[in-house]
Image (cartoon, rainbow, N blue to C red; front, side):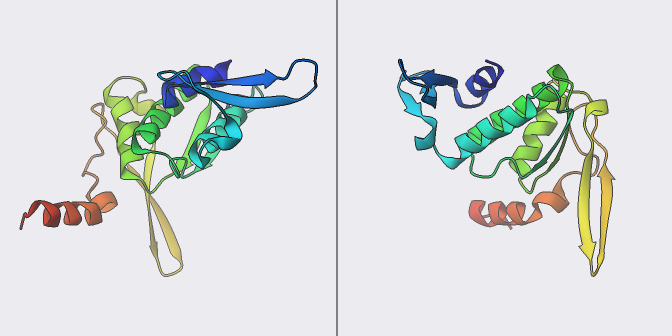
Amino acid sequence: GRISTYTEEIFERDFRTQVLPGTATASLQSTDKKSRIPVLLVNEGFGVNQVIYLLAKMLRIDVRTILLEEPEVHLHPTVARNFAKSLCSISKDERKQIILVTHSEQFLVSLLTAVSDGVISTDDIRCYLSTKEKKTTTFNEQKVNKDGQIEGGLESFIEAEVEDLKRFLGAK
């Protein structure tokens, strides 16, 4: 039930276990809320399957700390945004600590927007920029203010994208 609640927020789909009458065979199914078309989970994309799996692991009562590496991989940008918001809700509502690594500025901005929207506070989030020079990796904390902005900006995180956007838009 809790997985279905979150999949509705993330994908606008519900998630159910279906048992074939008279058998011990069960299948996992999701249903699009707009079209009302049910689909077996095995026929969904990899992104949907990975989120269902992650939710099943995260929502276990005995799990307090979750380590995620690039949870936005294989997700449509809108779904990645919704998933970031759901992770904030899971952290707050389910009292979970989530430690994640991402290379996605969009995912990071979605988390920071949750701060500016008041979903989570600056006490609930820590951001670190990892840099590597030769054999040494350094983690520098990036302070997040109440507006969800990282002090000093995100330039080091998205400088290549900003360069591409300037070229695309014809800026010099």
